[in-house]
Amino acid sequence: LDYNAIFISGSAEAVGLAAAILVIDDWGRVTSQCVLYLLGGAALLMMGLLDDADATSRATMIVLALLVRFCMMGATCITWVFTSELLATDIRATGHCVATTAARIGGFFAPYIVTPGVAPQTIGLIMFSVSLVTAFVPTQLPETKGKALGKALPALNGSTSTRCKRTAILSSSSSRGSL
Image (cartoon, rainbow, N blue to C red; front, side):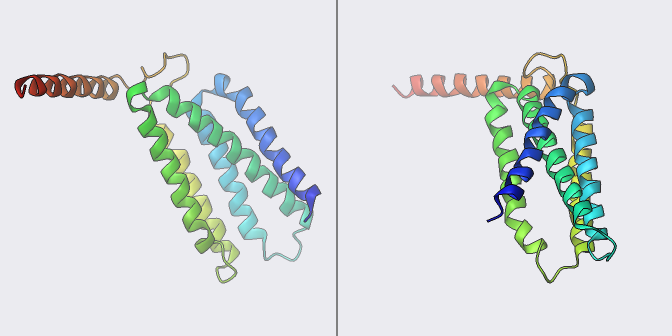
């Protein structure tokens, strides 16, 4: 195993985490995610397009790969913060479950997309497209910077809490009636 390469690659994620910590409060959650997902997606696309070029040096590919890991780690960390701030406590676990499920589905399909039989340009284009969609989704949600936890989506959070309370009241009244 090439432990130096593994260390350097892991270091890019540590730097991505540090960058996320630095930009999340200045840029806001939505802008930070969009910029990092788009930058990482652009680096993925360049890796795919430059893969067959004979003039592309190994160093260029390594720098692009580190940029991808840096950006995706930072954006993912901000996504976890964003979902925690966006959703009220009673539905936060469901939000995290959906995010984890999406990550697992992506992890399942990745080996079928990144195979020796698929052209690197196609792989880069697919991954860039996924990054575009991932960068677009937060733009459809409210910014949570400076807001109380779970208060960014008042209509959704209020209706869920009310629905849960109504269900609890109905359940307790029906159990009293059966006694």
